[in-house]
Length: 212
Image 1 (cartoon, helix red, strand yellow):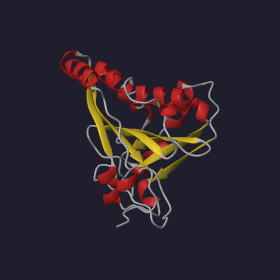
Image 2 (cartoon, one colour):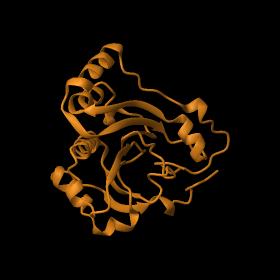
Image 3 (cartoon, one colour):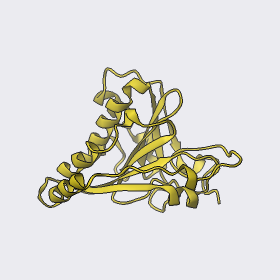
Image 4 (cartoon, rainbow, N blue to C red):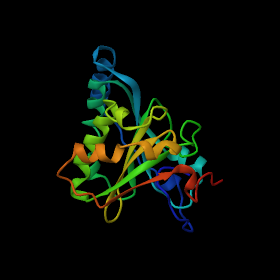
């Protein structure tokens, strides 16, 4: 399956529910220019968009993902981030993902399958701020000091839900999550935010993992 777990519902079509985020030609031209002249990131990061659709398989989910853009510099990151809808303005069931390199936000992806996510629930009025601080920490490699030596943060996700929203931070090795202080780092980034809960979940513990 994928980053957002869904229960099956009869008559739901993934293709009919697909949406898109399109950058203007002007924005793309500016971003492209920054790719060659901006301050380089340690690794590329890719923006993705999806909508949680009940009952989809991993392959169906992958087919309905929209790749927005892969950024390589600080300036191109801002060129994308400032030209797509704010997380706080997205509709229910939509998610943004920012993944290291060009990996897919899929539990079953070969680079992700042994990992998991820290999940933090937040009030909707806090989502935009929390998401911004988490993505900045990710591309700035601020989480590197808060994971085990043989672990790595490989992505971050914001998922818009009915009541509260969900922030997820992906790592590559679930077996090492207990040695991390990632949640504490998030709390320090937004000290005035009152989260509604947090927990860690390995990808392979999801009942929908590998559904075909």
